[in-house]
Length: 207
Image 1: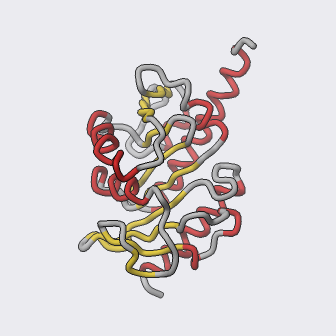
Image 2: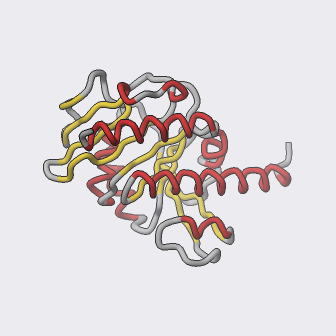
């Protein structure tokens, strides 16, 4: 089995897992992993596929310009974002979810970022050793043209070099890792934290 085939299997499994947890319902969400670093190619989910039905055949390989070089189908419309994150962060995998809690909290971020602090689960993020960690997740505006928005996203990633992800307003979470296993763990940690924060705030929000 080639590296691409192996990653296609793993990405399909991650996508179904996110669907089962309610983090990528219907056709929402997209997932990628680096096949080769030089020249750069990514395995990435195709556009418009129900993540609950995701199979390895729904994964294509793209080059550094987003052109399909393996598999069949059109890559996610947000492929340019995946490539930008890989370049900016040296990531080995990038995962994007559309959960209820991340969508709600993306509207709550003050000063352009959502701050998470004081939770033991923060220690599941790469390099975090204490619950006193302050995780600042930048919140960026949604758009229908992510290719044009790449410079803005790259600027945000430079502004928040310690961030383990970012939120798109009323859209969802992007996170990454050195490999697919770490990126999956970051999704699980951050989605837990979003739900914990959302439920806590829900008790104090006034109608």
